[in-house]
Amino acid sequence: AQSVTQPDIHITVSEGASLELRCNYSYGATPYLFWYVQSPGQGLQLLLKYFSGDTLVQGIKGFEAEFKRSHSSVNLRKPSVHWSDAAEYFCAVAPFRGDFGNEKLTFGTGTRLTIIP
Amino acid sequence: DSGVTQTPKHLITATGQRVTLRCSPRSGDLSVYWYQQSLDQGLQFLIQYYNGEERAKGNILERFSAQQFPDLHSELNLSSLELGDSALYFCASSPHREAPKQYFGPGTRLTVT
Image (cartoon, rainbow over all chains, first blue to last red; front, side):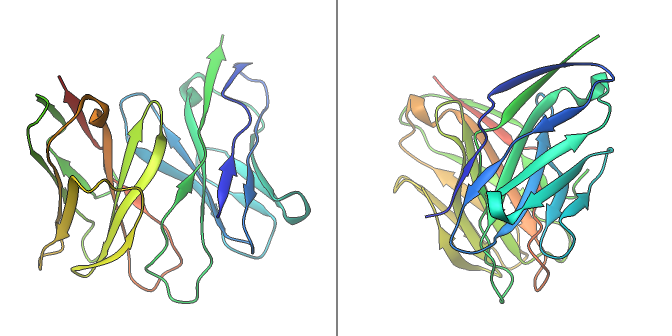
């Protein structure tokens, strides 16, 4: 069965510092990979997705992720965080299929990001 | 704004009751997914409908059921509610024949007292 591990439950960084959130997955083949952000009281917003091709993927809000097949990881990065980045971040996977329209997401447990001034 | 709407935003009810959560997908999206987010279980996939038909089932209790109507909106029915059913319930939709990308609604927060 596929699984997603986010080893860091809570991370605190200073505003302006760089950020890296870790995500490892377990799956028989390379799945589709996603990072979502959830602000307090809000729904989930897609930051970026990886399907194939370049292993460095650019997302919204200045985020990027590097996919490493050998490590089964897709870590989320941002060079300089802003106070508005404080939120919960979820990594998710979906099975790779040729027929789209049937991909449930399996989520990690999330990493809560706190930004200090 | 993802284009997915969910009503109601908040719901408070008592144990043993039944509630219905409603989801309207983005215009043209054929797939609707339901997820439950709770403190102890995290974000879990419940069920998926595609163009009116059930496509996939996850960790959905027998007390829960869902359906997707001809206009593609979906309802999640929760019955014989228990305290442990208190959670945030998300609906997501995705377009047909595109690489998977799910758009999430704002969620319905259910509190069972």
